Image 1 (cartoon, one colour):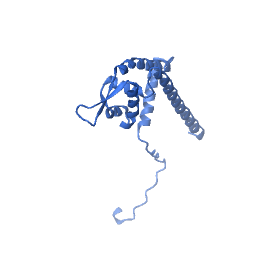
Image 2: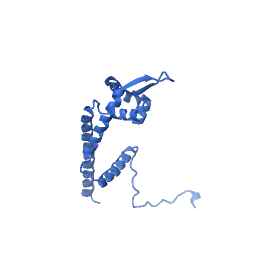
Image 3: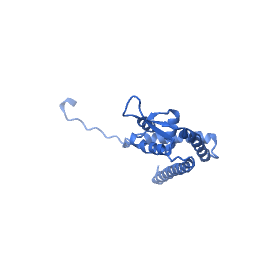
Image 4: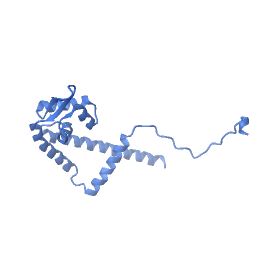
Length: 174
């Protein structure tokens, strides 16, 4: 393959990844706007969904489920509590633990939140056929898998030329 084709392929990859990043950014912005109509801020919906699935989780459990460290969950939980959507209660068995529970107001906003998420998903995929959606899901899963792997140096391909071994001068080689 000559240099022109290699450069052209690299340019295409760069454009594809830039488009992917731009689509993700536009999607997050659109989702944030829809969530604001429910009184939620971006990122809070993940905590709300986790509590809807299993109420009364600790900050550590929420952080683990989100793939972040516990301090990262503190801000959205604090804001949700200030908004009246969740409440913190001490553990009945371990005074060091704080559990987070949905309030009635939090449960009421869940339906609006889920509707906003569905609306965003439907708008994002409007005009994309079912077959294309499946193909996109496979491609995105592959990209996620590729980027989720630890970064390592690429191994050099063995050259086509093989070096001749020099004769071992030691007497044992005879």
